[in-house]
Length: 257
Image (cartoon, rainbow, N blue to C red; front, side, top):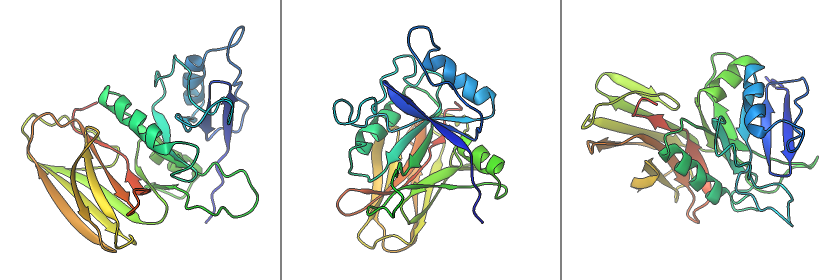
């Protein structure tokens, strides 16, 4: 059941990015005499690839030269996918800051997809709990998995199962879906989880702020009612007792973006 997916990491002095789904060469050189990153992004997408900004708030010089994302023309510019969980949650990738940046971009009106990457460069097993992309796909093929990532039909997890939907009238929305919901619409945010540590907590985040939370137990379901006008997007996070992220859904959009 292993499906290999070709990809390339674009490693520049102003940040790293992923070109998922492409086996041909992408010239990643930027600067004088070369393309800008804002030109590279649509080139990857035109070829059928998925462009992902990697670990945008990682430590930079002198610890990791070029690891933080400083391309001024892609903030996020034409990029629509960003890695918010890279390696160990509390590690040098500064994932909490990267997630906060993604929330800022979402609040700026961008329709984004959030992803995870292990960035594990060794040949042995990693010691830390790493985040993986759990993708809803129509088939176990590279093209369908990439389609799921492209449209935000995925959640990120180091093990727990986390499901999320919004119910607006007769419409049910899943991660990555978008609806133009009139102000004042009655919204039900539905969370389901299992295989969770018993001392974890699940958080409902709307427009970047935590508006509801509860302890999880190993499995459960919870529904938050929401009638406050102006909600634009929402997602779920599942966190351990020490605050480390265990799972994160992609957003559901209510402003039609």
